[in-house]
Image 1 (cartoon, rainbow, N blue to C red):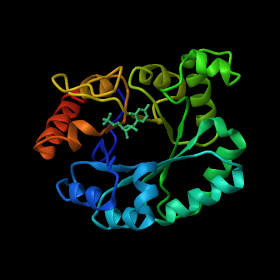
Image 2 (image 1 turned 90 degrees about the vertical axis):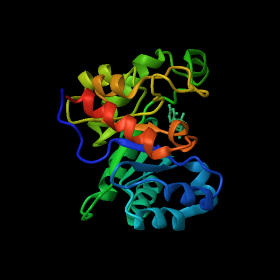
Image 3 (image 1 turned 135 degrees about the horizontal axis):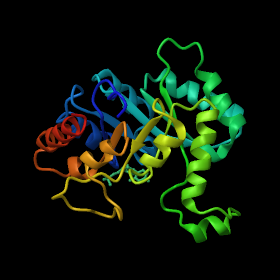
Length: 238
Ligand code: C5P
């Protein structure tokens, strides 16, 4: 197995509708035990100020805005995100090699560049959706194609389902960063996730970071759940 990533491997998805709720919840977390993720809903309502507040509290922050635009625009957006002091950002691999290269170049020379990862195929898209948008390959084949393209275009890794992790680990090598959502403890609610994977199985399958939302954000004792997940990760890493 590859060397474990340094620092916390759980990324708590702060899927809240307001900055106040997100900050109140973040106050119940510990930056030494998890990182946090801000996505489109929260960023659209609370913006860069919230990101800077969370960073100032010591959290490593994944700004999950999935940039997809012409290369110059994506490069500028990546530079702006990096200036907020975030730890990880992402782009759509389907934006193409030139777009991903431009994103990578925009971060060159920064003292502490964020990790730059790609989204391959949205897990909400099935074979029929892909056919309608002009793709003849199955989701699995397209995911691997885009992950390989992301690796060749200077991306540090991809977001993927834990089921895909072993295949992408062997396709893209030991240094490629795999970030996996859809994680649930064995005795937890599934919510709307169709294919869930336990923390232990995700790490054993090659994931580096686990994105976990509701199992932590809706817990009566979020730190207790976080500690259970961290303990499972530690066990899986031996
Ligand atoms: O609450 P839950 O643990 O299901 O949240 C998972 C987080 O990961 C959410 O922010 C969701 O948008 C994100 N995500 C996902 N599945 C993907 C990609 C991202 O659940 N394929």
